[in-house]
Length: 240
Image (tube, rainbow, N blue to C red; front, top):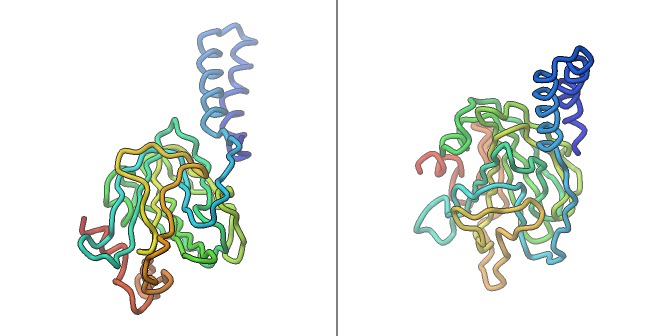
């Protein structure tokens, strides 16, 4: 279980014991049930990531909301896979590739329902760029209506393994993964994925080199390809 869940468990466990001592069984059972749910929500199961260095794994458990190019019709377009986490999903987040975290940025914002497209653009989020030996991938922890607390355990400069824990999101939320154009998407809309296990992308062996590493626009703080790339990813996401 994630240590961040301990306060939430105690908030309901202590009152349940007090109510039990007072003989107030209904209140005690209710508080105990809520405490048990918090333990369930903050569970942190062990996961065995694949050993293939040419794959990208899901960074979170949940349902794929969208999966497709940010610029439809352009073969050189990066792709985005968006995963919705319900309160029943494991909320531990994992690195989609092995590499180094080269950039981390917190972006304040709104708290739209995480399943809406606009959430990727306007909601509060942590933007994490992971540079691997072959590709660079961006993941975004996106807060939702219920998830108003994003936890990131890693910092820029940290090395991560494929499927390694990097943080968590408290209660319902969304996670976006932005893949370079030389990665074949394996996830489809409606798929159920498991963080650190499910393959969502594979490096195309015959793909042409992509325009360059994903970079951040210093004026807008949005993530996008370098100067020779396609423009801001978020602008494409907003136009959907």
